[in-house]
Image (cartoon, one colour):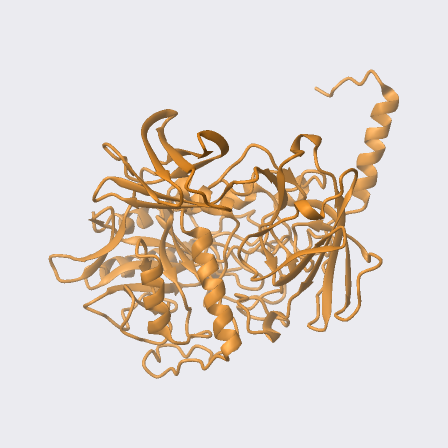
Length: 605
């Protein structure tokens, strides 16, 4: 039922305001779009809390229409070129702009915001979910900080730059060389083709404000130990004092079952009685209440969650090294998930869209996702935690590097990166691990893919293992072969084959499949598309999938311990997806896929 407005003049004003705002934005271009594109409200874009692993009740979303300009790098922002819908990248349709930022140009953003009166006396943090790639930020023309790295969140304390009353001005300058630079960029290129896609520049995740106390919690590092029934929680604070006490309550369905306390900066350990273990079949999550006290007074508190689970490897009775979850053999099987959208590029139109691919992955009977050369917003990983999907997390590739030569595992030379390129890789890889550390779904770190920028493989692999001993490390998925890390990963298209086997590590098939099927009216380019192998009907494609799946199942007793099928959805001109790029058509027979996929996932049980 429509609301009844007693004040018709007020209703007219609201209606006119809504029409005016929406008239300032429309999706750009004529490419296919998801059904969620029609649901976008420019006044309420991605309104969900952006950091569910550490949640406070008060915050302010800054997504929406901003002014933007694309200018030569030496020129300062003065006037806007128009409006852009944040947080969609400037090259995307949903930004309302769909323009490319050349290497000699800078992308500028500008908007105003106000601070609620209830935040008086608190520090104000300005958060960016992700900005690709080099960001400089001003508040009221005062420089508040800068950040490089296109895949991780960052924040600034902007309290000192705020006006005492009224509006505040927020200005952002972004540089993004895409494939003209050495920075991690995944599949982005300036000239899209084949497996390489449209650039993504500027803000592409939620921008938001958060009030915090003078002394506050900055980060949580959560590590489960199921062998000893312990949950370790490290609470990072902006300042630390011996008078600080941190308290963590562990809750099971709303009931406190355990409590831990620690003084100052000491980590705390919570004994978890009769621990409920997390798995794809039973993705149980405990609730955490984290409180910070100073001299006995509560100064800050956040809500979080955790899972008791363990990723490891072990040799089975036949001598094959198997992947294990919670000390039990598990064949991990899932799709290559690239996380691209025809309308939002890197950014899903809505939270419902964001979770859709994960839900369909579960519907298809998989238990794992390989997140391919991209890092997702925090909410994506929380959805994986809740739904029960193991994630293999790739490092987005960057720099030039040698191209992959199929099956030349022993012959590839490592890339000789420049000192700045190497330093930047190490910085961004560490930031990605830090960002994702506490999400239970992450099971495997993948530093390199197919020799793309692959360098110092064993050194990087060893560092990753030492920095996070709670996960497994796949040193180079399908890349140059080195005897390091926990996994040996081979790629083969289209059918599964064991091209290499390592008796000391788990041998996995990091990519195979690529069954192509064209679905008319759901194509990025109707007259130009490709797949590793092409079929004409859903029935033919489904039969081909099942045939490959049966081949894979036969290879499990011979040495494979995990596999990744290419891929979840079509992406741009690739039509290898189980689902069309616009997510409107499931291309293969879902019931038949689920049956065979579950058989594969249950092989080692």
